[in-house]
Image (cartoon, rainbow, N blue to C red; front, side):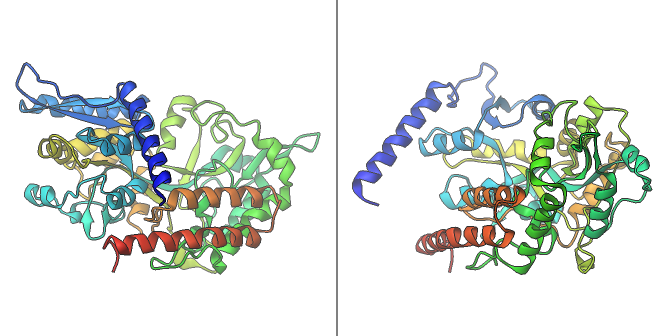
Length: 445
């Protein structure tokens, strides 16, 4: 990088760090009157999710008198975390997303937890494999999971009955999903869509991942992106078939009337979409905004010619890390250790309406949980073919490129194959640059 560009980049970092400090987010060393070591913990959660973690923090603070965890909700926590770490003034703990783990590990922004885990008797075998797998990179544990999630098909039983479908028999294959979606879709007297059976674009949070439901990957795990694989092309041609069948403009107009996710006007809660791919967290919003909604949950369908993909699901997990340069890493790990016990993990899971990342739970935990379908999400997370986000530094850009391609496909502006070929052509050189940089740093053989 030319010297002038380096200076500009350094100046940008300095200005950004100043903004963070001015915003009052920078941790400060404070002496407590009670003699406890104060641990500063930054977390992204707000609302009931933040309240749930605050309850865990309060429980930890009550149960011992050596450490005090100061819990702070921080917006854009991933960006502010990097800036604070680069500036040498990070918090002691931070709650991030699984997609951050490998990237921040490669950047040297987080500490490996292997030694702390070994001293505490914590092993990967104590966790659901798909969840702890998201925390392991280059043979090291960089974070521990806090709030796991898997995805499943949610469907409106009342709308099933109205369409003459069995409400206890959700679709098992993609082909059944398509046929049921057609029966569930309704238009009003003006010919405009009033209810959609299913929309690959709703809620639109995993538009990059449709290929995985058809058995694809986004890269081969070695040196090549696989965006244009037959499975990916098939998946996105399937997405485009909805736009062509129901009309891209009609669907766009229909979706423009959807309300916010966290509201009674949520497309699924309002009965505007009969079937939706969603996560374990959706029941919290059903319970809050539409407690009388009669709905079911089932594994997302698989292509009829790929029965090996039955039970296939996307998994994601929030995590907790210790930054490089943390003032009190050993004391910080004591709180992580509490989160890795059934007491801590289940207190958080109950508060957030999710499941525990631990294999072992207290007797009756799932039976007494408020989520009526929680066990299904747990079972899916143990599946042999779960998938998550690629552990690549270019992932944020690749995800955005896949999102742009999805939009072109969904609006029927470009054939699916052509849109994917453009992503492959743009991103493959960037993957190669990332791999070369990692080899120079000794992060790859």
